[in-house]
Structures are given as structure tokens and as C-alpha cells.
Image 1 (cartoon, rainbow, N blue to C red):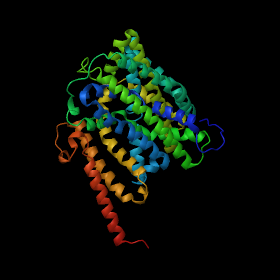
Image 2: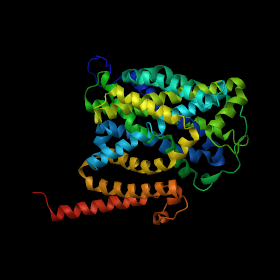
Image 3: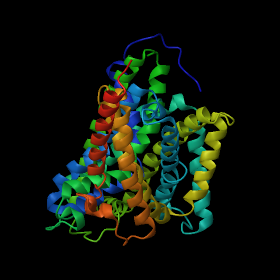
Image 4: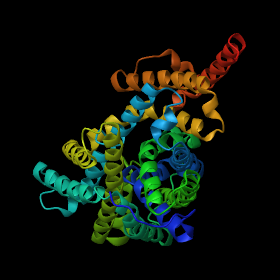
Length: 444
């Protein structure tokens, strides 16, 4: 892993901050980020603004908050160790598997293939799919093995190129709308559009990805000569704000694009279909190439960042295998699983995300609240309550979707927010237990 021999300094300046922010945006902005906002725009119709704002909270606010919390804590395990070392190790491993070879990394190749399939001769065959994924992961692995170069390449080349292509698509829709918004919202967007948008933000995986990307970004900043921990955290926060603003602007634009496809695609199944239809209307056959390029660049950026950061974690945690060996292993497993197809991967993702995301939100809150490390019992009980509720609901949804659970009676459970009340109650119980313990067993 190569590093620059840059003299020690306190910040990267405007240009360096923007470059790292652009790279962070590129790492986050993958398949899920592209396909969710356009579909949200279609389905939310007249409530698109409220739904988009809810989506921005979970899709932008939470990941950037997590990046900042991790920059202060140092690593995901350092942050979660306030709960307990065993929990910290287990939860971190589950998160890295979810955003890695078990789900997110294979999804990058599967999504890229689905969008490029019309351009490939014999694109429907298993052999072509495997060849595509093998080439995709070979290039991603080659770059992932050079972590210090990832931020520079994404910040200067692939990130700006991705934004440029997206701007081209959205401008075409603004200048010549293909259709009109739906008159009535669909599904959960009818009654609680903001909450529905918030839950949709889970599908980006970005909150969980923050636990990995924070390591890459902090390492890049350190390699540029910022040695002091507080200076590193401050620089991560500044670059995180840049990434958040870029993500919010792009999500808003993609949501608008979706609303203007409402009457043309009222029964759209996913956002990829919406983007493809919009590109076809405005650019004809060239639109297929444009959308394929957008998805390929976005997915490649995320895939590379994930392979590198996850290999870094596992090589540190389980050093019997080197960083290079872990990166190769992760890429190989992901390549094999990507051939299961996008539909199978997406079907597996929802229960897993509904189990991990609430605990991730609790961890971010724990990292951002000043002095939280002084009150471990509060966070342990809160995390336990949230984990039990979210895991039980996720297992039920995966195995027996119609089964009734007592937690279904909790406020917000029908909206996917049934973990909030247990979390608050757990924190209160932890605070009470801590107070009793201090009274019974005073210090000294």
C-alpha cells in the first residue's frame, strides 16, 4: 500500500477537500443509489418532495454522520467496543459481509451486467454473464490492490465523469419532460411519504458502507500528510459534507426525473427501467449506451472501494491472510455469487438490511453524542433492545412473512420503524440501571 511522503499539515485545502469528497461520493454512489430515487419519484407522485426529503435523511444524512462518527472513533470496532468487544467484532463482521461478498459487491456486477446486456452479443447466456463478471472483477481487483490511488482516480476521473453523464440525462428530462407525475401516490407513499422515503434509503446500503469507507478515506487523508487524529477527523467531516451535498443534489435530480416519467411508466418495477426508458425517449439507441456507461462507472467505483476497505479490515483482524490474499478471495467469491442474478440478490437484501440498519443507526448516534463513552450501560441495553426487535422482524419476514409477532403492536412497526420505541425504552432502562448501580456501589 503506497503512501505519499507529504510533509505534515492540518488540512487539505479547498481543492483537496473537494477531491476527497468527490471520491467519497463515488464510493457511495452505486447500483442502489441509481435505481431507488427514480422509482421513488414515479411512485410518490404528488408527494415526491416529502418522500425525497425522507430519503435524503437516511440515504445522505445517516451515512455522512457515520463517516464523521467513525473518523472520531478511529475504526468501526473502536466505536462499537463501547457496547462490548464480542458484539463489536460480530457486528462489524456481519456488516462487512453484508456490504461485501454476501450482498453489495455481487450486486455491483449483476446490476452492471443487466444494464449492459442489450449491448452484448448473446447477453442472455450464462457464459456471457460469467465472462462479464470475471472481467469486471479483474479490473476492480487490480485497482483495489492500490488503495492510495482509489481516492485520486475517483476524485479526479470517474466521479466527475459519472456526475457529468447524470447531468446530461436529467437536463434532457428538464428541457423536454417525457411524461407527467402521477395524480395519486402509490403504496406507502400515500399515507406517510416521508417515512416511506426514509425506509427506502436503507436499500442504498450506505450507512453500513460507511463503516468500511471511513477507513479508506481516513487512510488517504493520513497519506497526504495529516498526522494528527483531530485534524484527520475534521478533514473527514469537511470532505463528508462535500460528498453529502453532491449526493443530495443527484438524488433530488433523479427523483425529479422519475416524477416526469410517472404517467409513462405507472407500473415500473425498478429504477433501472425508469432510467432506461427516459434515456431511450431522449437519446434513442444511444440512450442504452449512456445508461450502461452510468451504471458501469457507478458500480465499478463502489466495487473497488468495497474490495479494498473490506480486505483491509479482514487482513488486520485475521492477519493469517495478507491484504492481497483477502482482496483476491473477496473478489473471487463476489464474482461467483454475482452470477446468481440481480433478482436473487435483491430478494435476499431486504431482511438483512432491516436487521442491521437500526443497530447501525444506534451506533452512529452513540458516536456523535458527546460523552457517550462514559455511559456504556445505556447504549448496551438500547442496542440489545433494538437488535432483538429488528432481528426478530427480519427473520420473520424472511421465513414466515405473515406470522404475527407481539412487536407488531409497537408504534411505527407497520412502517418498518418498530425498533424506535424499544431503543428509547432500552436507553431509559440502561440509564436507570446505571443510576442504581452508582448508588449501590459508589466509586471508591
